[in-house]
Structures are given as C-alpha cells and as structure tokens.
Image (cartoon, rainbow, N blue to C red):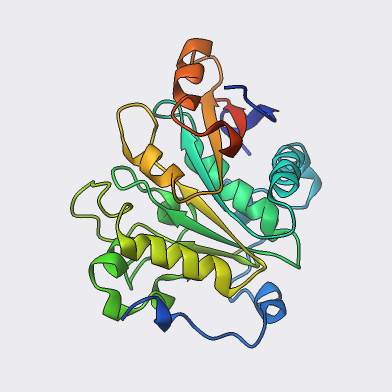
Length: 255
C-alpha cells in the first residue's frame, strides 16, 4: 500500500421489480462461504488498495480490524449498516469504506456488501476493477423491475460484494430519501443476518446527502484528512450526526 493512502490512526469515539427479486439463498452460512470467481492475489489486492492477510498489509489491516472491533461492540449481536463519509474532498473516505468492508469479509462467518452512494464522484467500481455492465444502485432505484441481484458484483475478495452507483444522471439526495432506498437496505440487511452493509457516502462539506444517508445507517465513520482538516472542521462535521451513531473518526494521510 502507498504511504499516502494509509490510515494513520483512529479515534474510537468522538465526543460530539423490486426488492423481492433478491436471490433466495439456502442459508446465511452458504452466503458466508460463497466462492469468489476471480480471487485476487495479495499483489493484485494491493494494486486495488485493499488490505489482505499477508505481512505486507499487516499494519493497515490491524487498523481496520480495530475499527471493526469497535463497530461490532457497538452493534451487539445483530448485523448493521455503516456509513463512511469524509470531512472534506480528497480525504480518502472511499479507501476507508472498501477496506473496512474488507476487514469484515476476513471473517468467514460474515459477508460485506459495499454500496457506492457518492453520486458526484463514484470511484469504487474503478478502484475494485469492476465493470458495471448491468448498472448499479441508481438504475435499480429508477427501474426496480430490473431487480437488484444483477447489480451486485464480485470484487476479487471472498465474501465482499459491490453495488456501484450506476447511471447517476443527477446528483440528488432524493434517491436516498425515497421509500425504495429504505426498502432496499432494509431487505438486504435482514435477508441475511451475516451480511454487513457499508455505504460510501459523499463529502460532508457542501452536500446534504451525507446527512440524509446517516438516517439510513446505524453507525457513521467520519474520515478526516491528516494535516488537512482542522479540529474545528472535524467538530463541525461530526455535529451533523447523532452522537450515538458516531463510531469514530479515522485520520487518513491524504496526498
């Protein structure tokens, strides 16, 4: 992993058709052990800025495992939805979101679903090498008869799947406040109790979407650019969210 894309620390607690088209699985255990059709080697995972179990990724992996432990402690015995958002642009929230999802996917008893909700600057499909030929989240929200199953893509990491943004014609929070979005997340969370959902959201500054998405999430992880975002900016950013939802502030070394 490149040093300018690594996390430098974690503050564990800050003060301040339709859904029925989802595939019917035989059991949550079968989902947890699902095969990865194109499993990537550690070097390929590093090229995609994904953590792995080998020694070269250990320091970063431990950082995300620490945050995973914090979230699991807050979430209790059930699964949950986590929103990851940045204080300001280029703070690395997408990097944190996909690696936090990867940390949960390390556990063979759990699966992770990463949903790209950054309508203005979607990057997860590029970073993960996914070709969203069947569309993504917005395509489903606009045309639910298409179903959501075809918009869930393998990532090269076992038990980690991606729903990309898809064809976002307009950057509008109306998608996220819609009943269809609520119903989709509710169904995908409750259908498989071993599935943990991660929403890669837009920057907090200058966008109402982060606040709208926080209403759909159980927990919020805020990403601050190390040496870029001031303490005042961080405090102002976390004030947008309910204190009991705030899982932590991750300081990320930005370019």
